[in-house]
Image: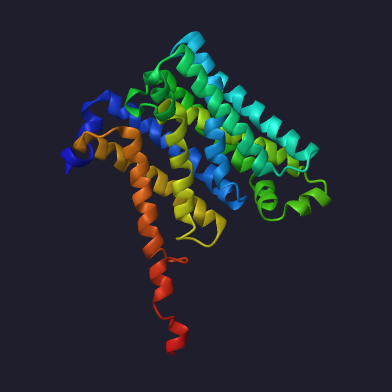
Length: 288
């Protein structure tokens, strides 16, 4: 049992770094993903993962594989997309989701163009899919800092985010700062994606954000319960994915996301809150 469940982390430092980084990412990404689901913005996470690509690509071309430069570049690109899509949706008749889609497609094309022109396919694959087994101490500290900042920010803004998710008109009528909370929340989304691409890449990081959140809807009715389930699924997926990666000689990032995907698929059938099995079984009150 020791060799199966703990020996890889006890023997290899890169596995310990990967585990610590993945767990930190799971702690912050899961609640962020759940709020995206609550706000009916599930695809916004995917859009934002593409939005940070040109900033990270420009920093990569200019400074090489610099954690600081790529993080700052990705964050700035994400903020530009947030502000640009928000201004367009408020100044025109275009809805916010359509505005997001337009901006992220432009960003994706720009990022791929920059890497293709001044980098190579290996650089593009590294930015898109990352390498969780290459997480070093500076990256680990960055992931831990982002996770801590995210959890503190969510704790402080929990009530206003919940109200804004379910009844944004209430905040708008009572001047509760719904727009400010929305903007701050999107900044947290971008920050977690920037942290995530260091380990999982811009595309895989969205999986650890959205799959546990979608899974939680099948197991809990109240928001605190869903947050606990989402975080638990993300943590277990990070640990299980790294073990699978080590024993089966698979890439770490996709293994983590596939573990989360397996839990999601199982929850569709056996989830206690609207799962297929529950829907197919006869209800108890009809038997009495």
